[in-house]
Length: 131
Image 1 (cartoon, rainbow, N blue to C red):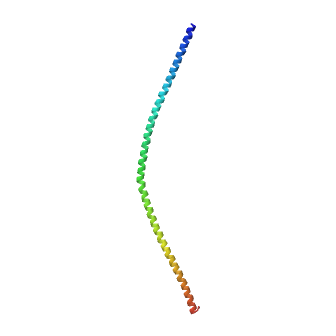
Image 2: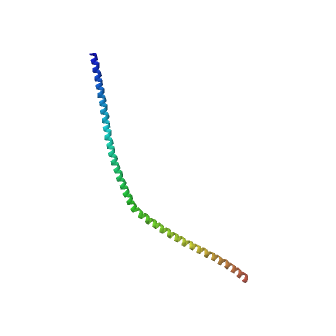
Image 3: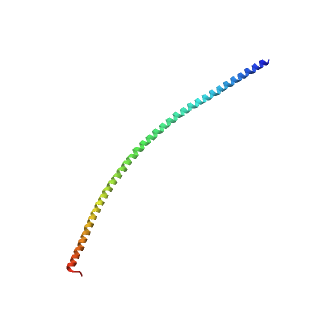
């Protein structure tokens, strides 16, 4: 009877160990299924996010094209205006430089004329005498 009890205990313990191992396997299989489900969900999220990113890139590209169509003509017009203003300013500068050169020439002539007048006056004073 003692041996029978011992055998029964061993069988019970083995059965419990078998149940425990089976239970562990079930738990692990459940975890694997849960992880597989999560991976599938993450893959779906990744696909969705990639689609959203692609859609946003297309929107941004479209807006960039619109901006380019609006901004470039304005930039060209502003650049043309600045170029014209610059050309006019250069022409005005050249005109003023020429006028300044002419005024300097006239000044030099006037100074020479004044010197000549002083010399002539001195000659006349010597010839006539001074008062």
